[in-house]
Image (spheres, rainbow, N blue to C red):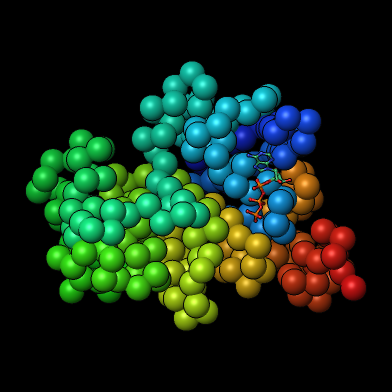
Length: 244
Ligand SMILES: Nc1ncnc2c1ncn2[C@@H]1O[C@H](COP(=O)(O)OP(=O)(O)OP(=O)(O)O)[C@@H](O)[C@H]1O
């Protein structure tokens, strides 16, 4: 595998006496696109909260670019770009003001920030929206702005947490294409969480998470071979005990 950008080992997390993650192992190499596929309640959001440092695991370790999340969180988080499940733009600010704010948080000089903003918006076809309030954009375009924002500080690992929730099929497809393009062109490693099997089809590798455990980790052909299923959807339903 390429140099490792994310290594999570033996992660445990419970809410009271309810276990959410039960010994999760996860490793992502540079430039890899990995889909984390799990039904509702599998533990995807909990895993994302641990990877972004919002929660601390009960046990286990997380390293991003070799930086341990407990001992060196600022360094670990500097290598991370995140698009959260909930929209996190200020809707009254312009697209550019939203992006500049994020660039300022990362200490990017204004000229460099503006270059990257222009480049990022062009890459997702939103140059013309730059000075509009975020409120004027469609849900799909707001997500693309969040994607541009997540990449402004040039992270090596991009986390997309169920980023297509609430989008129509065309917007979902466009967002996915934008992320796949970005991953292939810039070499950023991507962890894409979803409960929708079709969103995992373009990934280099699929992890199936169910009831807090990784039930499969490998390529789609390997998943089909492992389960004997004819397609990923059947394999997923079989692994998660939902097959008819
Ligand atoms: N704050 C919380 N308090 C108690 N239990 C929680 C909390 N957050 C999550 N859980 C439980 O932990 C388990 C994993 O939840 P999590 O939200 O991580 O799964 P998920 O895969 O993201 O699900 P979804 O696709 O529905 O968002 C579930 O059983 C859920 O009910």
